[in-house]
Image 1 (spheres, rainbow, N blue to C red):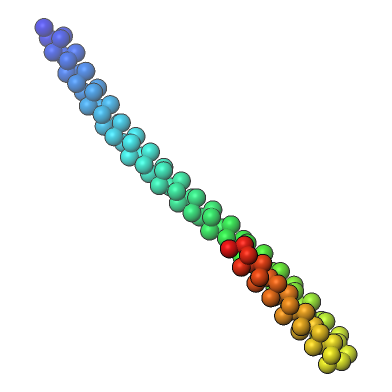
Image 2 (image 1 turned 60 degrees about the horizontal axis):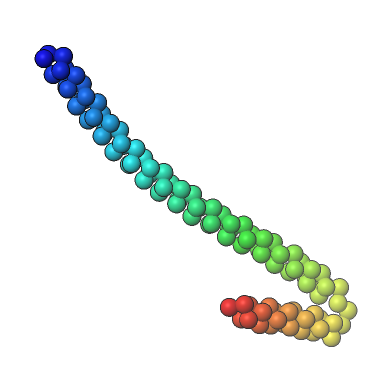
Length: 101
């Protein structure tokens, strides 16, 4: 009879421990999901920033190129042509963006 009571107490104790462990496991799984979600957002932000940096570098390169062209221009007409080319290129880019959206 004593052994049955002791075994019952041990079984109940083990069940309580299992319940506590499963609750902790559930809580940890939720934390992991939240962290994965955060990592996903961070990765998305990083890719956006990377794209932004690439575009900024393209703009800087293009600006330096235009500055050199303007400095090398010998007449006002050449400068005017360079400016018109920039305006036309920007207008084309805007039209293409509008078509994409």
